[in-house]
Image 1 (cartoon, rainbow, N blue to C red):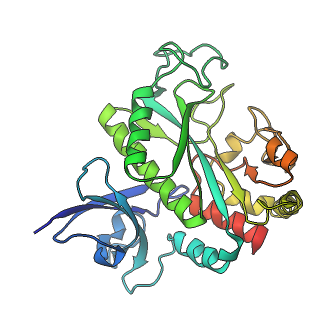
Image 2 (cartoon, rainbow, N blue to C red):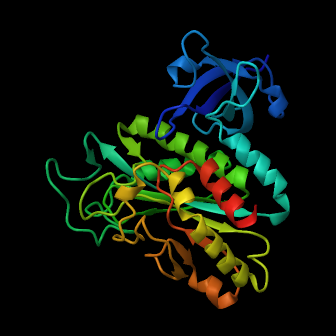
Length: 336
């Protein structure tokens, strides 16, 4: 009998930022579709999702990819969390996005997320001198060489794993602060981009274990004159990508302006430490959009402006944002 090792992955109830959890299930049959993956219970009292005297929660498989670490027919399985009675758990934000994306499927929304993160070894970013600081920012962005780039072996391993898993990863690069990196997922539909982002994060954390380092998504991992870490979210609809779509994009920007504070609430914890108006950010207290302006809340790429159609880049989401919430907010505000 074929045995499949399935790693069930879910989001817990930790506040202010939910954490990834996973556990391993051995299944005694070949998996051909989602219906072959059973629901599975867990102790919600240990994940901030239930109380001790009523602790059962359920994992409902909703998306799976090949497991590139274990290989073979083994799987990584993204799950929604349900209450014991089968109702949607209050920490399950994917369900809301699934409902909205189905309602607005005619918009053919695409998302591309730029995930920044920082590798830490102990209490310092990887490659930083012990008890001190590296040279000022400048040579590290897209750098080459052992004195300017730190952790490339980890980053390359993560890239390969994402590709083997079938994720729509479109690139990687070293970022402005040494020890900081970025990869991109998409463009994909709202659910696919969010599911794949969470799985790619799980792979990042998992492979970092093997290298003895930790990856953090904190939006300001090092205080002072260093860039923070964001998750710039590129967004478009079919009408934005069509001739004359620049008008739709600018209308969307005005709608986003009116809902700025609501979006900030779901764009990641501690984002005020990053959105200061410095280091290629707009102040969290302001909203503005502009063409080719990396100091704006929303950047309209130069190519989009020149073509008259394309996409917008929301630069406000922090690295630790929940893509289910961000995709929901962008869809709801601009198309709902």
